[in-house]
Length: 195
Image 1 (cartoon, helix red, strand yellow):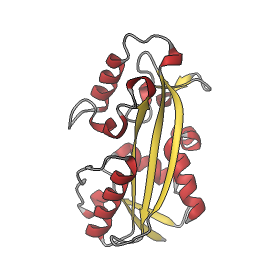
Image 2: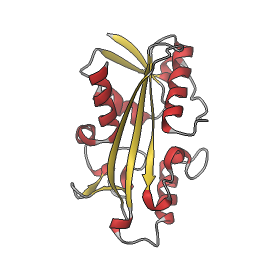
Image 3: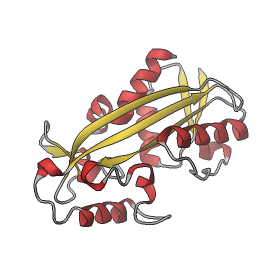
């Protein structure tokens, strides 16, 4: 099996990626197995940040590296939180704090049609730290911001990401269901097709 270092310390993402790629020839190891600390996300786009993370993990581990940069984009907020999703409520914000800030920002907007949002995921695969041709795959997942958090599954903004087609939030579906329709699942599916 090919060993891949996954450049993330987010246990929710690690679980999703390991589950989604469980039947491939890749063995996914979180960066913590190599004592790799998260690199500063100084890019201005999801792509830049994913490449930064993958290159950092590949350089320290000496192994091929996989990285994910993802976030939620809310149309009526001009695309916020966007690339700042993980630190929307501050540098060391919890998911609960980020969700609370997002709900507060939308408190005066009651119409669900005006609460449209989508998750974005960029997956980058680097064969080495000096790989000049990274594999870059995109995925998105459209929905709305719920009026209040619901559900116990998932991570991040899942409790406030409402899926009209399913009539529930992303935190109310199972991991297996999420890996059929999420932004990360879509990006990983494309990665499996190109590699």
